[in-house]
Length: 171
Image (cartoon, rainbow, N blue to C red):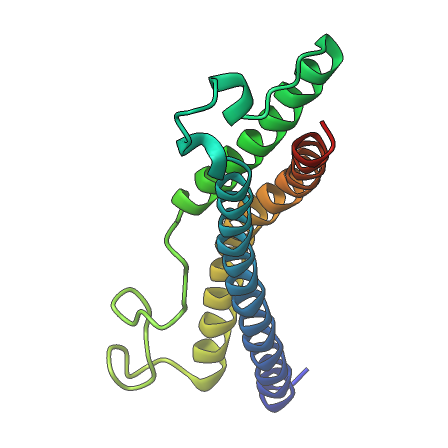
């Protein structure tokens, strides 16, 4: 394979790496937004369900709508545990912000003509491809952490909300 063919392959590989990086960045942003929305939904449900807790004329059990029966108490605390678990998982995922890698840092890479005059176009393209591959590998790990947190919190959030709403309105 001659030099021109290698350059064309590297150009197309670089374009594909840039496209993948953009898609991964958009997906990461969507996942972060979903985390914020889910946290807001959990807090809204808890606020709605516990809105009667301020009324001091009622007992604690009545204000927090804790059922009298044993099975009701078990369901109540199971639902509350599910909601709080989902909230904990989402807040923890939100706080785990790792450094998002973007391959634009030229301090440790050679750019044509600026640092190394002997750098060929093929070598430059190869370094760019390698830089995007390294950044994508690191970013995939960050994305996976947040995505798994959303996956792990969704069902407990829904189950806890349904259980608590049913207990609140049908006791």
